[in-house]
Amino acid sequence: MDMMKLMMSDYKVEMINDGMQEFYVEFNGPKESLYQGGVWKIRVALPDAYPYKSPSIGFVNKIYHPNVDEMSGSVCLDVINQTWSPMFDLVNVFEVFLPQLLLYPNASDPLNGEAAALMMRDHTAYDQRVKEYCEKYAKPEDIGAKTEEKSSDEELSEDDYNSDDDQVAGKADP
Image 1 (tube, rainbow, N blue to C red):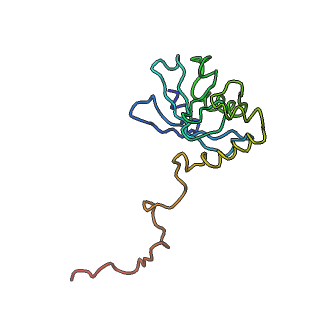
Image 2: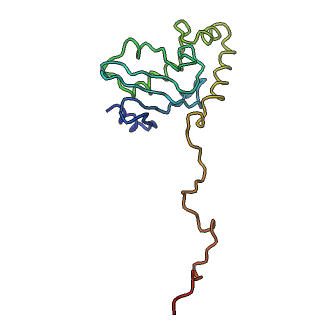
Image 3: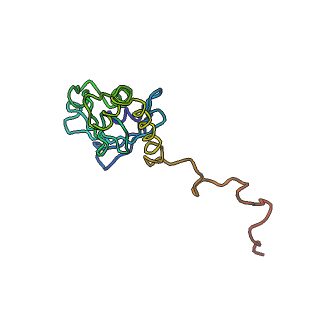
């Protein structure tokens, strides 16, 4: 199944409920783009007719982009919305379609009119706004990723508790 292919391609996948039709995928902004370093949680819903019908794809945490609705996270992408083919799979979505969307925004077909207008009017201000959103909303902690820290479940090293193996825990029965 496509979801397994995603996991085998090293994507972090988190199930939403017991079924295998709704899940989250951790998506990193493409290298050498304004979105590099950003991390987004993408909600994927597979229709019953998948792969003959396209998946529903949406950003959970905020992203500033002309083709992504700022409030709902919905994505405006022809290849997903109009020209989907059963030959495509979820790996294509995360390795090709979404990176292409972020690398080449289409301001003439916007879901976020304010982002599209700013991109066409003042590209430098647009670039700055994208970076601000990445800093503010697209860090690992913004998608619920756990930062590396020592938990109480981890084993303690010998230095963490001063134990002398030579000492007896109690007195032996006579």
